[in-house]
Image (cartoon, rainbow, N blue to C red; front, side):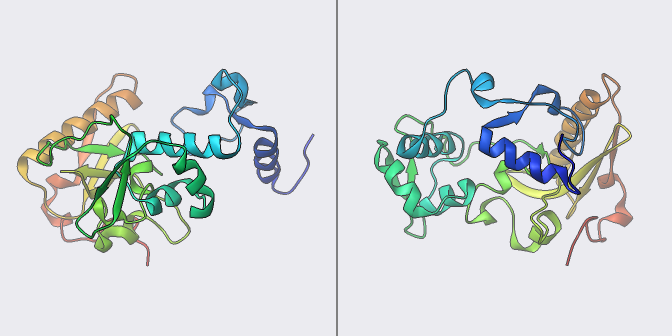
Length: 232
């Protein structure tokens, strides 16, 4: 039995050393994972994990399958691995290479889809610590510098945010089964309607079928206020 002032630190160390992961019961609507069981990663994944350069190559492959095309710096930001560790894994993969507007090299998987630039990006509610907000070295592609402090705190905490046209346009929270939307600025009518539809679907999921939605977009006097959760 672990008897420490901060037992969660001990359990995180044990989980990392013994290759343990949280069990399925941690995937619930809750703010912490306290009290959920650990299971061996090999049992959960159905196979032993890779090691060395093979493991790095798999990490890069999984990252690019979700976020490519991306720079080496993007992969390093998301994985937490230095470029010196990533390079051998990159060399094991056959990758497509592009250049962005600033001349930076972009890497992608050979047959990964490349949607045209005018592909519509529907409004989406992102959960706390969503990878989209943390997976790039240059976060301005989805989160402007103007609103970064409101969404990402100095301690690394990331708020629940929502996207409009592929960019963060405000924050949201779930309170007593009610979704509250807090846009940074007035939203176009179509985007607001689609976002509220998305919020209703989330409220229904969280409430087990009961649909309720509360949106600050309907309150004109709140549009000029700074978004809740802004940190200096």
